[in-house]
Every structure is written in structure tokens, then in C-alpha cells.
Length: 124
Image 1 (tube, helix red, strand yellow):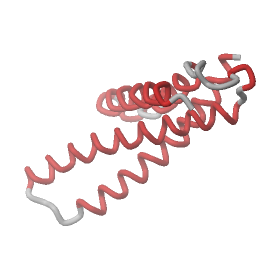
Image 2: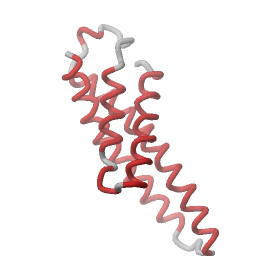
Image 3: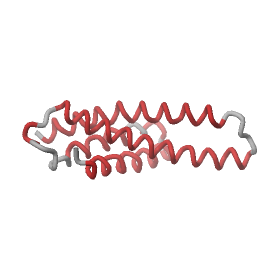
Image 4: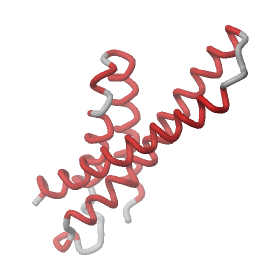
């Protein structure tokens, strides 16, 4: 696997999702799809690229989605810590943080998988 390419896809995922979720919340799903697409589309360093199929694109997109989901979760949690400290509420922070991480990872994993498959299909 080309971790550099997966990292680029994850970074694109995190940047686009963060921007779109702060501006237009319903469009946050575009980031993981584009991140998975970029990771699969740029994965020419993959061994036997001519033999690469949709399953390989799904794996690359999924890895990009997981890494991007972790980055987005960290950004959301850091913002949440600041907010909770400012208003003085710390009771449910661990529960809310856990739910945030789980939802972010699940959504990004699934949408990155879709983007990876689309990236391989478009490349061929």
C-alpha cells in the first residue's frame, strides 16, 4: 500500500469535510468521498496497478476514510474541549467524545470506501 497516497486522501478528506461542515452542514459527506477518490485515483505506486480492481480501491478508500475520520474527530473534540471549558460543563464530555469519534469514523469509513471504488472505476 502507498501510505503517502492514503495520507493525501485523508488530508483532502479532513480539509474538505471541516470546511463544508462549518459552512454547509448537509454537504459534509462530500469530503470523505473526494478523499477516497483522490487516494484511489493517485495510487499509481500500487503494485500491479493494472491488476487493481474495485476491492483494492475500496481498501485504499477505507484507509483514507479512517485516517480522515480520526483527524476530523480530533478537530471536533479539540473544539468541544474548548467549548466545555469555557461554559464549565464537563459531565458528559467523555460520552459525547466517544459518540463523536464513533460516528465520524463510521461515516468516513463508508464514504471513503465509496470514493475509493469510484476512483478506481474512473481511473480505468
